[in-house]
Length: 287
Length: 199
Image: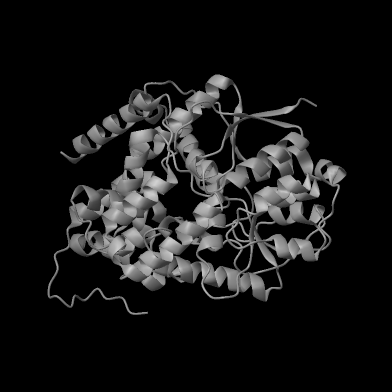
């Protein structure tokens, strides 16, 4: 089999608040033999502020990065669910209309033929590397740790654009965590919105949404929530109301832990969380 | 749920060209809406909106321009896509909301919420560096929005900010990308296009 190779688009959050997500993804990719080459000189995808205010901008900002990726001759691996949707949406629109693509080429000044496929890293590890291969490489099974897989919005919706999994009851992350030896709970809020867009501006709304999600996870018996998006992780970790907090892990941190990444490295990721996940992992003798 | 279309402010004009404009720009099939309320039932932010999503759709069909463009709803919509995914008539409600936001912004109707200010601050960040520097975004938004004077919020934010800082979550120095001129070109051309479209 040819080695899996991608242009890696980390996105802005992974340079700062979610640095541990970036570090754990690179480590896991190395172990699973996926070559991630960071896209040289990538720029922001425009996120929600782009599509909320200017349709052309919401296509042109991703188009610049898609064109850079096309020049590398590779597909794009994205870590952030919000970036993932912006790229999939732009790619879909640009590939559906030649005249729109030409208009956007005039705006960006670079040509884009539309040959790039955009994939989320969770999808790459589960579907491209394959669960069998992951299972074969597990060194430290997660010992029945009870986890709630949280997918949020942009991995699964709109399904015709993301083509990721079932939009109401996705199971891709559950399948991965089960292979790692964890037990995932069946719960009500796996695709509910955490209000990430309103994170800075409307903390009142956000803390209600986050509170409901965290409560639902706790009530289902989970000891931690697992995410595949730096914005969901940050929002759930930082905006939890009340005294009882539930830790929020990046899927790649648990994947790294199970694949036998060195303890010191794993701890260097975990200590960056606002609500420490170390206690629950220690209680299961995982760290 | 009552639909408050019989106006409490007296007679309202139905601006039908406006209704047509939204339909054309968003390419959302608004005419298919039969008010089943699936969108509003699943909307996570409906509790905080002044009008629920299905009400905004009805008002847009009727061309109630002011009410639609001045609503807080169009800005509070978190673009989570739940409504559009569940709509039995396949109405692209998110594109519809995007279109309303864009029109409201061009007409300067941005008083109802701080969201337009947030978006402007965010896009400014991209324009000046090519990428978002989170610390700059947080500080600039806190200053511009006046949140710096809301002491309870500010106090909470400062505690959180300190925690983030000590956990190494805030990178102090921003970087600039090499191809910044390309990003600036994108902003210049799309802003020009936006204005042309308006004229």
